[in-house]
Amino acid sequence: MTRRVALALAMSMIASVAARPAAAGIVVCKRRQAVTVRVDTCRKKETRVASLGAQWALVDAGGAIVAQSGGISVAIAQGGFYVIDFGVDQTGRAVHATPTLTTADAGFRGVAVAGLCGGTQAAITGLCPAGMDTSHHVYVATTSVTNGVQEAHAFYVSTN
Image (cartoon, rainbow, N blue to C red):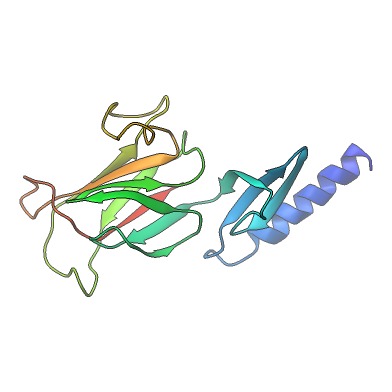
């Protein structure tokens, strides 16, 4: 297969996957020398090397993921401090945290702050525990209504 045909085939695959609904996560997977674009998750022997588009999660006050775009897990949830594992490098992506109301957590609250746990663009070094101080991990801190202390609350976290 010539390079032009391979490039055209890859571009058409990306275009068809990109045309899917926004809820579907687009991931780039690698197995040996082959790179494949898939929806949501890689297959068993593939490694996820990138995600296209925004990744997001709705996390409740206890640290459970209520909804997400795919591939995200909560590594730590302690009294308003959370470490979120996005599974892929987040360097160069904007990190957002937004406080939100849920049925179980509908009271007033303060702000939510977020940033990369590690890598060259980490805003604060040493904030996340060893092993989680990578550019795959994002910290989120939620606060009380006075913004004076950390307090567990639901939030949305996203990168794009």
